[in-house]
Each structure stands twice: as structure tokens, then as C-alpha cells.
Length: 193
Ligand SMILES: NC(=O)c1ccc[n+]([C@@H]2O[C@H](COP(=O)([O-])OP(=O)(O)OC[C@H]3O[C@@H](n4cnc5c(N)ncnc54)[C@H](O)[C@@H]3O)[C@@H](O)[C@H]2O)c1
Image 1 (tube, rainbow, N blue to C red):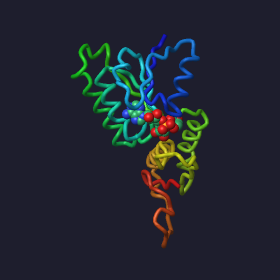
Image 2 (tube, rainbow, N blue to C red):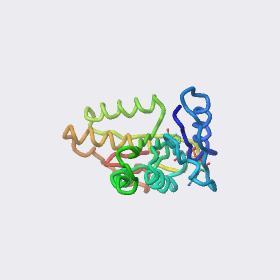
Image 3 (spheres, rainbow, N blue to C red):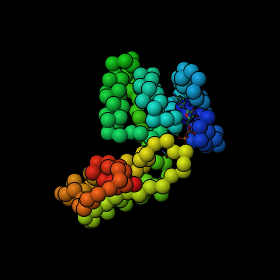
Image 4 (tube, rainbow, N blue to C red):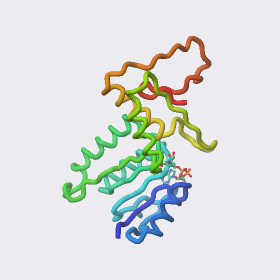
């Protein structure tokens, strides 16, 4: 049985993860942690799933990596700087965790768990080099706290990398006047609306 801990267990996604883990034959729900709970309950888990908030997640990464705990992170907000920070923590984890080879933790950042979304990102990456211009349009519920979404930001990064690898230059943009934001945010040179 794989022991799973959930960070953000009372949230929309965290509670779904808890339910899903409970209904899986090979997984055990070992700990549920939300605001106000001690993270010590997570010690001994094989993996910790984080669905908290972009504000809270880096502190959780730091704590889990230093505690030798593997993580699967669904929380959004992982730009290049955050991924680099997580990598640095993992690189440094050998100094803080004894018997490092045995317990060196791993962190998997998953901007979107939906198969449809993962395929969409892959197809966008494949298509990017065939077009002069590529932009992203996304739509979410009113309670979403981060914009652009982690999915859109990751898709933009994948499009930009594919275009760069193919030697494509920046997309043309004839905008002469605009209200601020009307052309969207720009992630790695890709407009996200
Ligand atoms: N990767 C994906 O497929 C995917 C899908 C949906 C949402 N998300 C992202 O997951 C995150 C959570 O989304 P949600 O809709 O479940 O939000 P939510 O607000 O319903 O739940 C977040 C939960 O985390 C808790 N929390 C906040 N800080 C915490 C901390 N320091 N320690 C422990 N618990 C803490 C909150 O109390 C809350 O219960 C967001 O960043 C969202 O964008 C990712």
C-alpha cells in the first residue's frame, strides 16, 4: 500500500484527492492536512499531494523536501523561478537528510491532471512551429485565484520552446493602440487571454 498524505485536504481538489485515494485498492490515506493542522502528520507518508495555494506551496515544498518526503503538486503558480527553487531544494536535500541516497525525495509538478488538457498541451507544442503566430485563450470559473492558469502558463512555455527550437521568430503584433491588458498577459512571448 502506498501511503498518501494530502495537503489542502479540505479544499475542492484536496478533498477529491482524499476520496480518490480512499477508493483505490493500492493506496492508503495516511494524513489529511489543511490550514491550522501540523504537517508532522505527513511524516512516514510515501508521497504527499499538494493542492493548497500558490502562496502556501513553496513553504510546503521546502518542508517536505527537508523531511525527505516525495511530492505530487497540483497547486498552480509554478513558473521557471519556482521550478528552479524546487530543484535547488532537491539538490540541497542530500545535505540535510541523512542516508540521502535512500531517502532523497522527488517532486512531480503537474499543472493539469486532465488527460484532455495534457493532450491539448502536447498538440499545441506540436502545432506551434507550423504557424506564424500562436496565442492562448482560456476561460475559468469566477473563484479562480490565479491568472493565467498553470495550464496556460505551461502551454505557453511549451509553445515558446517549440518555436524557438524550430527557429521561429517572435509572432507579429500590429497593435497600435490598446487598453492595458486587452492583448492579454505575455508568457515567454506568447499572449494569454
Ligand atoms: N493541477 C490541476 O489539475 C489543478 C486542478 C484544479 C486546481 N488546481 C490548483 O490547485 C490549487 C487548489 O485548488 P482548489 O480549487 O482545491 O482550491 P481550494 O481553495 O478549494 O483549496 C485549497 C485548500 O488548501 C488549504 N490551504 C491553504 N494553505 C494551506 C497550507 N499552508 N497548508 C495546508 N492547507 C492549506 C485551504 O484551506 C483550502 O482548504 C490551486 O492552486 C488551483 O489553481 C490545479
